[in-house]
Length: 219
Image 1 (spheres, rainbow, N blue to C red):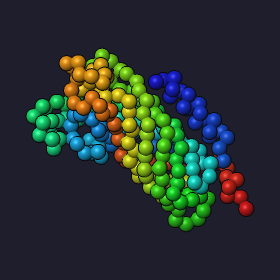
Image 2: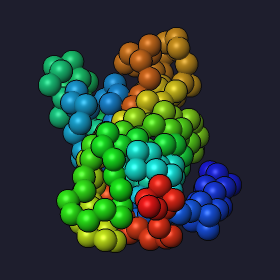
Image 3: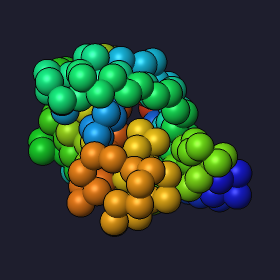
Image 4: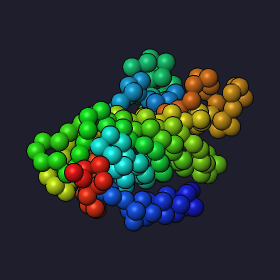
């Protein structure tokens, strides 16, 4: 995990040094799991999440994006609308550290050098690598992030965004329900072994933009 973070930081540094316009900033919000334990709601943040991100704006339509996210996650069957889960009464806590790279697409042209009200919905697609706890220690896995959001240019330097990002993983043990992470029941796991766990980050981003005037804006 440390090597991946260092690699992403090196890529981000390269992006900054060669960028025509770029952004650096922070994410603040919440997290929740979609798994075999706890609430059945897809978007139900119950723990605080923080992150850092950098973007390289290649055009008014798309940007390269790298980020690092951290959050504690937890769920309790007592919060579920499912009577079987409430009767089971299982609860857990875990920690997720995620590094992600990918591309952000704007629905409208988002020219950072335009005057006036600039805004757009956007989607982000990429690849994530994350670390999480198990009963035997830490484990690592890949995930596919899909984020939808809306951002507004506050002034010449700051951009405010609101987004919801779901990560589909390749593990069924984020909620500690499948210790061997297998596709068959072995006496220790429970829940739906045919469905992998997801985790969701919901919150706000605030980025600071600077750099040379991009070539796509020159007259």
